[in-house]
Image (cartoon, rainbow, N blue to C red; front, side, top):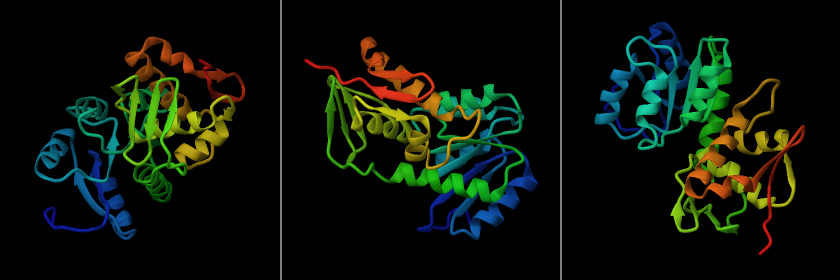
Length: 238
């Protein structure tokens, strides 16, 4: 496919040094109405991003020769807010957690099932392009969330949230004072079922707390962990 060809289809950029896997995914995802571009290293991805409009989503392999996927993700965040799905061949959770902490939206272990990857792509695109159901602005405890513009402000200071982090905070604030179970929050925010040992949601919540704390240290305490159940946004009374 001509890399300069204009298309209205969502553009995916796959960054993976596994040539055969990249070509397989390109063929499969192209049949699902995606414009799929390949870069076989982080350096090649940098060149592609410098000369093309941002893709709708990036699929990024963690382990690559030269600059790793984690280093590349750390480099482009927060300037480039393209949704990212990380691919990891390691069994250890540390790479997946690091990827999420650096701003990835989701992860999938390799070898990955193309159908599962397709489902994750659609889920990430859906939550990044669609505002939460409640379209009104939420204002609680000094935090203002505007679903129409996807802007978050804490006491006049903008919060640089990823789309997933925005949805996490919006869902918790919309149910302020209530416990939102991890199962419910995973389905609402990540558009999939919570699975055993799945830490993705926990990391996203942790990132929201961290960004709240950076803006105002006490604000991190607004999100309470309810052990064995889920999370609760504390409704502070004046």
